[in-house]
Amino acid sequence: MKITKRQLKRIIKEEKASLLREDVQEGVSRGMHIAVWRTIEEHAEDLQLDLEDPSILVSLASALDTVARELRDRTRGPMR
Image (cartoon, rainbow, N blue to C red; front, side, top):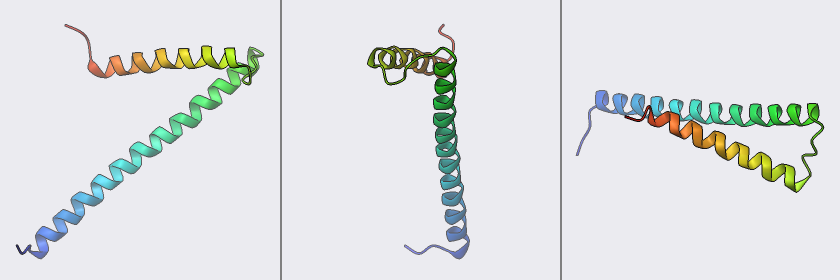
C-alpha cells in the first residue's frame, strides 16, 4: 500500500503531537513527584519527624495511599 506525501506528513504530525502530549504528562508526573517529596520533607522537619523511622514511613505511606485513592475517586466524578 502506498501513501502520499500529504498522508505521510499528516501521520508524522499526529505522532509528533502524541509524543509531545506524553512528554508533558511525564513532566507533570515528575514535577509532582518532586513537589510531594519536598512538601513531605518540609513538614517532617517542621513536625520534627524522623523520615528514617519505619513507623513514621508506614504512617506516611498509609496517608499517601488515602490521598491517591481520593484522587482516583475524583477522576470518576460524582456518584449518582
